[in-house]
Image: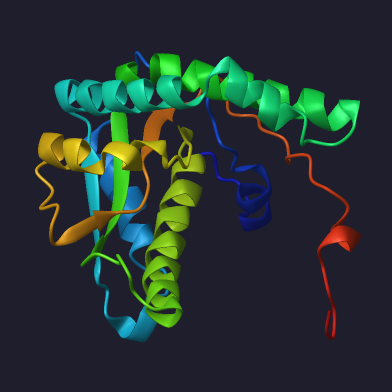
Length: 216
């Protein structure tokens, strides 16, 4: 336990990509501790219609990591990067985005070596569901998944919310034994101890750009 204050945990839980210790094992006990806290998150109408697939089996993690790597590499081409960076605003914003993408590339390259993975899921599939149904489902499971990540941070573990694997969701379902027709995956996160435990608050835009008090 790092014994961080609640504010410190909230301010320094980052998307960790470069500073994951892929060699150190992550035991079941610490993963269950994080999940126990995650399950205290709010859930729509107390339905708890969620599932959480956690694996620290190196073979499973590697198979899932390779799927992630293949999808990411196919998606993030030079053409994609050139197009996306031009939309980032000034030079400072563009460089910041490129730094982030370099970090993302590092994660894709090393994901198969992750010692543990975390896959939040929902019961049922949302294909064609109305906005309210989707909001209830996503809102419930995402809060719990974020609580897992916060709990992980306070235990010296790093995580990173990713979704590109959903292009091959069925393949990941087969690796992990998830019943694809009944359970929909929401995200995929590596879980590993971090190299060092000091993290700073992230850089954010001025809140005047998107915070609206007492109306828009």
